[in-house]
Length: 285
Image (cartoon, rainbow, N blue to C red; front, side):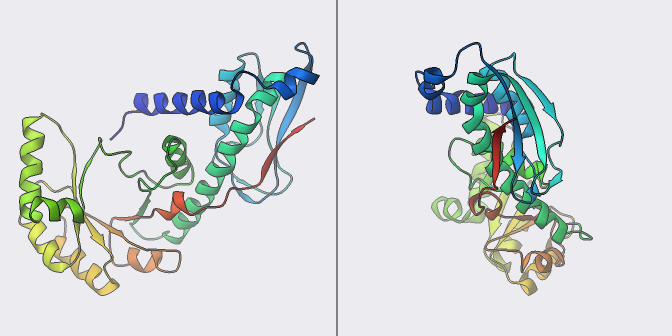
């Protein structure tokens, strides 16, 4: 999986690009009417019930924009909040606060939406052994903070990108000439390139599950678009030979039923691609 150091670099790149995109050669609205010496204070105000996420990201944005800005955190990441709550105060240069404002809000509104949805899925799985995973179905350029939000909401991260795990899906299998051949070629590739990457293989039916099990070294089998009955059969067939993951159109209505089939993981692209930003604002105090 991706290292903490690599994730930290991703976060820095998101901040650098976000400020570049939003500020350009200067925040001329603020520069035009607010003296450089002006000091101010603002609060992050919650206007909608949610699980808050992005507080630590906001801290990093303010630090990047102006290391003299002071943050007073009232509510930490992962906590439930309601209308009227104040998450943090930021004080210092008025120009700096305004320069950072939009990136902070855009990120926190989306991260809070993802954390809220994830927390709801985690609650639905309570009492089962199943854990919720995200996918690579993320917004281009900000994957690191979206996956961060999933963790804040109590979920777990699937692979970060194409480079930190092998995942043999239907197209890989078809292009390679079948499941067994795809696995063999993958294992040869990993050996030749001295890479230690886990292998997940997608199965489209029980026959494919049976074929995957004839190969050694598979870390997890992805049961794609299986019904409940076939999922239970697949879990029984696989036993403790490798981990199991259900995926494919699973939603709030079906999540618990798939978990009760005994799978180790359920992956859901909806955690990141189908959320509506939560309503937060940064207001002068």
